[in-house]
Length: 238
Image (cartoon, rainbow, N blue to C red; front, side, top):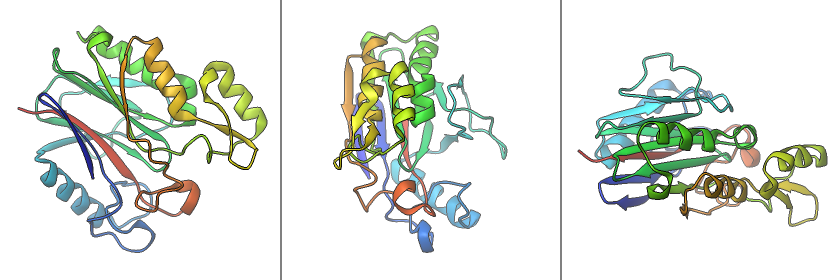
């Protein structure tokens, strides 16, 4: 697990080790909709929260969209369809589940606002990260004060896509245009998200630039298909 501390703000990116899940989900799978034993997922989530010193964690029902919401407590058994959340409640952690998509964590330590976005190919194209920055700004944050962390994701040299898809996404986010190491069309989500953040006024952008496809310690849907999900967490300490 990788952690970042910025004043009272905590951020973390988990990996696939240290949990109780078996089989292709081994072992710290935090995703509840991938076919794993629900009891194992619940234990992994509780164990991770305890290791990070967290009591309450918000998990979304991620749908590859651009809808974001302000939250004050964890959702119940059926979370709404969202790909971004933010809060000003100390001690309430926000989690973003991924396995090739980018987990993007945001914080304005002065305003006490933190947010998290699930930015895969559809979400990056739709602008979920700029939408989250805008929502947090409307809630009292200032982009110039924000710190962003883009977690592990499929890199621009591995994320192969059809040429037509590359052209369509790059028409919206030009910085995503890339080629694989073997010369075929690809998308660079990290470069695209970083550019979106800069255009939104967020200058302090930090990276855990591991490629999920190339890193066995992380889950990768493209590499494994049947697999779990790791997470990015962000919170303000009480």
